[in-house]
Image 1 (cartoon, rainbow, N blue to C red):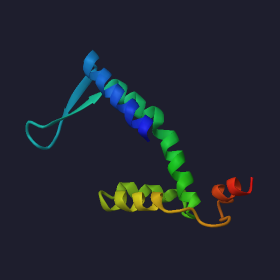
Image 2: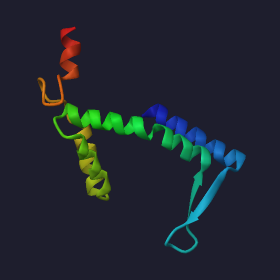
Image 3: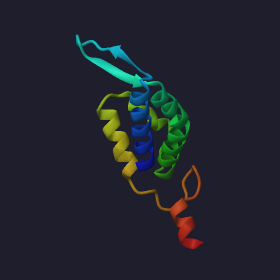
Image 4: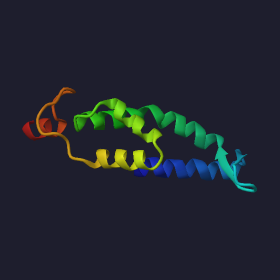
Length: 107
């Protein structure tokens, strides 16, 4: 996550430096959201791996990968998803496979 934040910051800075960003107006008059092309490209590049890691995390706690769709629910869904992501893995194997932590202990 730290590297992801650093690379995002780097691409935002590069977009500002090279002036490769554009603004989109919001519903509030005079307020714009600024996006950069490098920032968008990086976001799309890491989207699939981020989803895969989150689905794997849901499987570790015994939940379906479809649980990540809770992010669609504003605020409450995000908080619930964060709570699920920080939970400890289920002890022993579940329907998605063995516990990766236990495999490391027995190796």
